[in-house]
Length: 394
Image 1 (cartoon, rainbow, N blue to C red):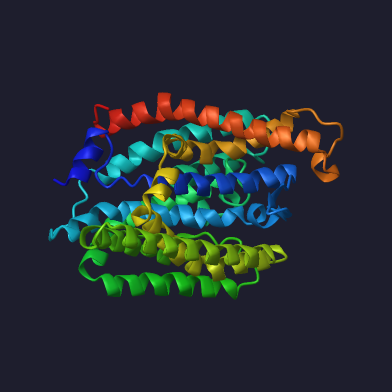
Image 2 (cartoon, helix red, strand yellow):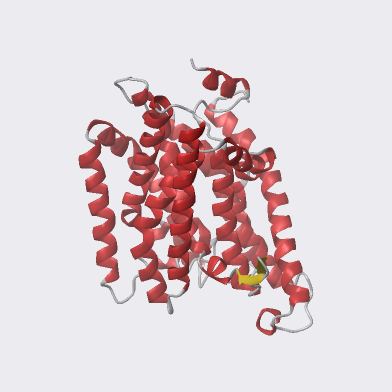
């Protein structure tokens, strides 16, 4: 056992834990949340860069694309233990307890969120046409097939952001098969996933309405496999590349270049006009974005220690730990605040009038409340139940 692995286990962390990814996970989840806050508040802040005012509008308007990054990170982390086994020269791949751990991680918190939204929002507001509509919506969500149907995806009275979990759980079901195939035939499997992703998105681009096709599992297969490939690259480099200042500098430079190229993709996406053009732009940019983010994942994990510490500090670790709950609850909290008129505003449509005295407090309060709720649910609900189901003592 390496010194690094011993240190990780002594801290109660997984052997493959990469601290820098904590910061990246939170930044991506936070970016998605900021997009949703912007949709409600229309607050578009500016920052001062060398005396010039730079609007954050492109970043805010394209915050939805970071869901792609979250799924990419999932693929990276799912395959990382297996990539490390291969780098260590082991000739087998194992999935013992995989589905039990995934169930413990996802299902209790997911069901809690659905139940609360159903009782607090969907029912009181009469958002279901009839009881059968509610039953169908619940069945679709509980079977994680809700991304397949318009009534439970685009038009659900429940939590709209949960389509991501539908895609994620669908991928969990095939993960052992895909991982085994990638282990045995990496090039063939990667090319197959690439063909599936590019081919499905090409089909979607030629449809008059791609709303129901944009975020289906086949449209993300190459994204997930880019995560696999990045995990494999990291494991190989970690074992075979000298951990010296020059190599760390090279990895940091690769990261910086990738971040700059990602910023160009964001600017291009922000310039798209119309829902169909926005969806088309996202589908066209999905593959290059996942490639560049893969380089960022590997680059920050093997780059300069200062970057690793910046992204892997205790605050980032805490925010990363609650990010699953935060992702599920942030839009629910913001929507409820808007309905209850918290905080109060001077006009009926404060977002349209640009009422800063409402916009800024709204965003800050929504963020603070969401973090508090997420921390409480993580500590007192998610973790205890996950430990009980998975059989872990701590």
